[in-house]
Amino acid sequence: MLSESSRHLAQAGGKRFRPMLTLLAAGFGDIDAPKVVPAAVVVELTHVGTLYHDDVMDEAQLRRGGPSANARWGNSVAILTGDFLFACASDLLADLGAESVRIQARTFQRLVHGQLHETLGPREDEDPVAHYLSVLSDKTASLIAASTRLGALHAGVDPSQVEVLGQFGERIGMAFQLADDLLDIAGSERLSGKTPGTDLREGVATLPVLYARRAARPGDERLLSLISGPVVDDADHAEALELLRAHPAMAEASADVRRWADDARATLAGLPDLPARAALHALCDTVVTRMS
Image (cartoon, rainbow, N blue to C red; front, top):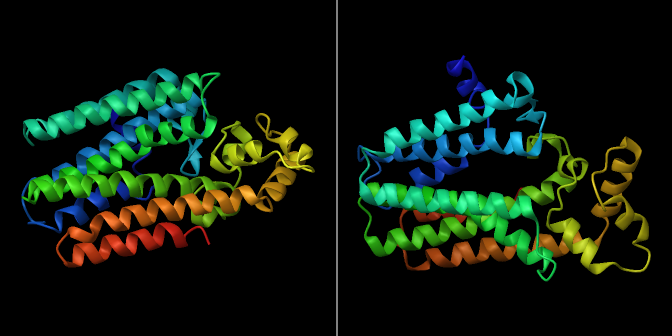
């Protein structure tokens, strides 16, 4: 049973963005070092394990174009499968040394912190946009930063460069997730890997929605009414997507993606001029252009 459920999401596809970054960061040192690939596996197992738990908490029925594990086997099996994948990651991590364990532990703290903050929502005196960006930093960018750190560490990269690559991972992680938010509204299923407007249907207030609410322009009353909660009705959903796509909030959120990608690119300036750096530069461009 566990063998089947633990392969469920891995076999369903995914971008493999995190292990790719582990390998790219290792390109600043010895990419063939024996611990580089296990480090990449650790970050992907951790990521996939969080997806099982996220789907339970979100009561999601679909993941990567198919039924979620909780929809197929129930919440208990999904939770235990996520736990099993975390255990598999920890088993590999034990052979990577104390510094890797420390990176993973601190990353896990941030993952849980971000999930908890998302669950609780912003405080009454907290800016919803600032809260949302803080959640993304912990839930998404933290593991992407760990991916680059672990790859560089185990390729024998200079410690100062390991830190720079960690900062790059944090920034490109923010750009990557915010671009996904925009693709959920403006993109196609082919580009985003999910049906457009999934977050709207589930009542997830992503950055464009938060910007539209904050702007509250004259004439936005219908849009604000539609995005005040989950948009379940098909006609309302189509209307909300159309109104959001035409709203200045989309351009504002797009500018944020570009800023994060530019910040990520700027961190690379002091790194050696190697093919790995060119690849990371190209990745910054790809994260931005995939919104188009």
